[in-house]
Image (cartoon, rainbow, N blue to C red):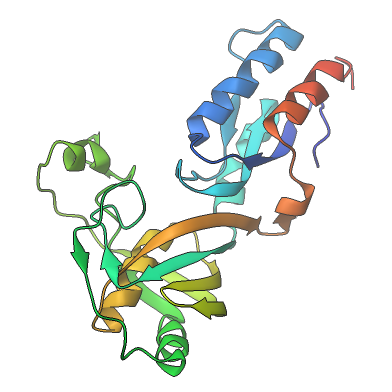
Length: 234
C-alpha cells in the first residue's frame, strides 16, 4: 500500500482535497509516473469517482495494477458527512442554491434516528441529475446545467449501516456504509422526503473502500514525492 513498483504496478491511496475532480487527481499524478518511466502513455486510473465537493479516500491504480480497478470499485464504501434538514437544492448538495425551505420545528431526534434506520437494506435509488451518470452518451450534469429535463434510471443499491453520529439541527451528522454505485447525495435528499420535509448534503468524506482506509492515504504532494523518489527497479 502506497509503495511504488513501476514494473508490477502500484496502488496509491490519496486523500482528495475539496473542489478537486477525481480526473484532476489522476491527471496530476500521471505526469510524474510518465516522466519517471519515460512512457507517455503510462496507465493510471481511479477506482471510484468522488465528487468535487466531496473529500477523502480516492484509490489510484497505476501500471499493471489498473487491472484491479473493477475489483476495488466493487468493494463496500464508508462515508461520513452532514445533512442539512429544512431546505433543498436541485443538485442535492452545495453546488446549487436553495430552492425550497421547510419548517423543522416538529422534527424530533427519534424521527431522525428512525428515518436513518429506514434506509437499511437493498433498495432502488434515483441518482442525482447533477451527477456524472451517463444518459445517451452524455453526462447527466451536462443536461442539468443547461436546464434540460432528463429521466434518471433507478439503480439497485444496498445500505449496510446508517449511523447518526450527532444532531445539531439543522445539521445531522452521519456515517454510512454502502454498496458500489450508491449516491450519498440522493440519500441526503430522500432523507428529508421521508420526514415530509426537505434536506440536502453539505459535507461528505469517503473514509473506507473495502479494507483501504483514509488513515493510510497520502496528500497529492506526498504522492508525487513518493513517485519521484522511488527507484525505477523497485
